[in-house]
Length: 151
Image (cartoon, rainbow, N blue to C red; front, side, top):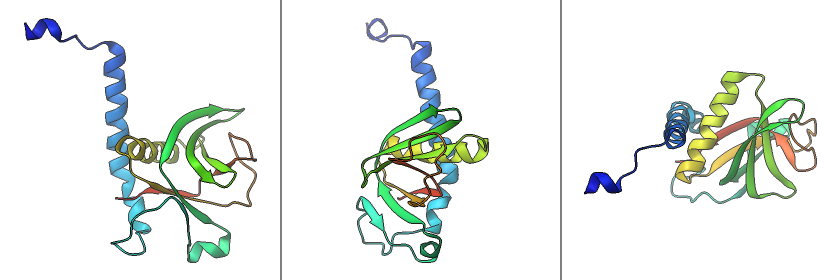
């Protein structure tokens, strides 16, 4: 009786499961990047918004903490990974990484998909003054300098 109520998995279901598992595996391998930038104090809660940086401030790098609302591949002459944070950092709601360096793109994609799947916030470091963005609009998007997932 039970076997009659269970459906056999479709190829689409299997593909979705494989993609999810791959994202989790890749993300867990590279979330060590988040250890380089721990929370200021272990009892603090992670709030969405800007977090002050120290050494990167001189370079103009800004940190934004968000819960990822979307992860896309965007082709605008160049293929890019596009991460959406809503609400964004003012007008900046999207962060992009070109896929020209496949290993870096895979690490960023793994962290982003893992964080989105488990509902964890990420930090994204970016240069707000750099409007030379690859793969999205310079009005609401910036290139990813660094990304990591908080525990």
